[in-house]
Length: 171
Image 1: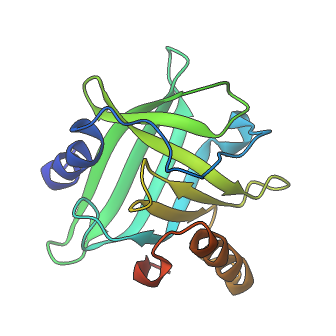
Image 2 (image 1 turned 180 degrees about the vertical axis):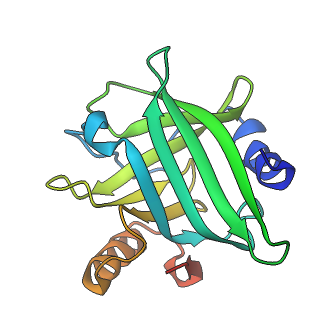
Image 3 (image 1 turned 45 degrees about the horizontal axis):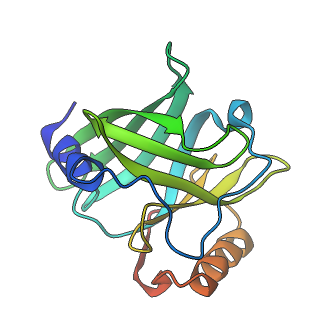
């Protein structure tokens, strides 16, 4: 585990127990975790110190023995020419059919991981919010997705009040 990514993730998720959602945002219903597990590529994000300078960012989700979800976040630091990785755990806040989870990369402290839009037919893209509108990610099953889908997701996020003009696009 690389110290810089882990330290930054601790700052995001570890300094608060906030596993909530931003006001006026709803998680997806009809969520199926089995279809969500596996590898996702970060297409775009709002800037944060814990991911600053990272490219080729991925998240891999798998089952944990305790019934939770194992989270492996990985990204390449272009400046330092090294891969950074952080391993965490996630649990459902409500029921498994609601896309609202709490994620921890450090001890008992959790942050919100809220799936606010999802390709429910094929599970090929998702729009994720953290506990506030300062945290937003567009994820996809491959490093590139159709620009029409990106435009739709960005438009939805903008309607919800996220600062989409600040999105960083990775692919």
